[in-house]
Image 1 (spheres, helix red, strand yellow):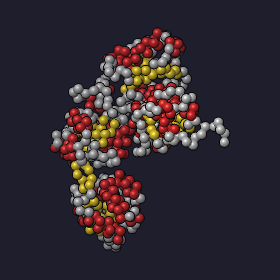
Image 2 (image 1 turned 90 degrees about the horizontal axis):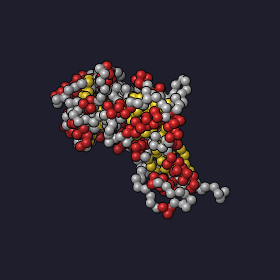
Image 3 (image 1 turned 120 degrees about the vertical axis):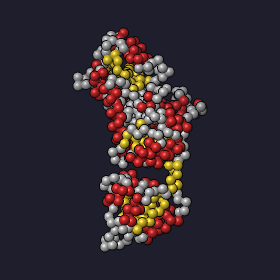
Length: 549
């Protein structure tokens, strides 16, 4: 063994990871992989929420810096608090992820931490991220180069010296300037003083790649007036970072055609979904694709039946061949049966020889996750009525057993039971779970609901209307109300709500699509009238101009 080679056996390893400019979707696959195996996560505050969701629940996220300077070898320079946290964890044999905004290769402090690792022989790797200076213009619809191959210069206004400004000012290169909102005009002045024409186009983007993103188009000479007219300056938020792009490639006419992100139909809208996070997962993903921020508020809680004996007998009957069919009308019904199976040491093989029906895409997915492929899913409307449309009548020649097991909620309607009996089947209608009104959401959420802090609410059933109003209050009249069908809309109107959007089909995804169409039409109308595009919540008295996430 080479005595001069670093000994890694007692040390951990460090991954210096770029978290990108803000959009969680811009994390690389390697970044997600590294986060999933981390023992310790040390992240810049502005990206902690972006990366933490990919880490293990047990990951350590230390907030206090180590003050044990005696543990630092003499040949390692004094480090900042964050660097001390990294080194302390690595010395303890931990797998450390050090996450920074943008790209670690552009962070001078991270270079210092890498040198410290190298000095101690600690193994480290670098996972590049998308730099804000590149990612933000892309999200703002501002191309930095075209087929003519214009040069691109990147400037950090905080450290740029007179020579830097002079070189960029004397060229025709596209300049990407990292600065603060209240320093944009000063940066523009530097470029004009260095030789750029005052009428050179300029874009300024704040909170880039997030749903708070906002971009203003101006020129070097007019940017101060544009920001003042937009009432974003003067402001206590003037110190927030921005990316400014200067050059002919960011002309207003071109950005109008290329602004793909801020022109999404629900861009920046806060949409309230009265469902649990698990129930709303795919719906929330769809809303995010339209530019919205989804906020889930459970309006019901699921509890076991008061008397479990009926459910226990039914599950035993399922195993002993009592049923020809089992019909699931909700994800909760699948969960209830699965939990009872696990209690008895059973698995999906117990469904052998039994036909399985499911109402709704999410219910079918829950069954597939359990290892069961449904034999029957409604071809049309995803409801009890839709299931009955496709359900075969009982035939004593082909059906050796005439009984159906129907595990449902305690408040389920009788439509499905009556329809199955009419088709000649015997039905064991079993209470698999109880639904009770959920606890009220936090005070901040209740105030946002009643005060107009949400731009839209998606109601997926009459019970979600009644329960939301019961636990949190009635949504403000500026909030767009979207309902999944006529019955839900009627309940909303009975509670004094104005229904703005109705789904063309009883599907949560069609409901989200209908809301997106409503948002797009609203945006088009504002642009056609020459008005600024605003969110519904920005119309309430005293509302903030800046979008909230």
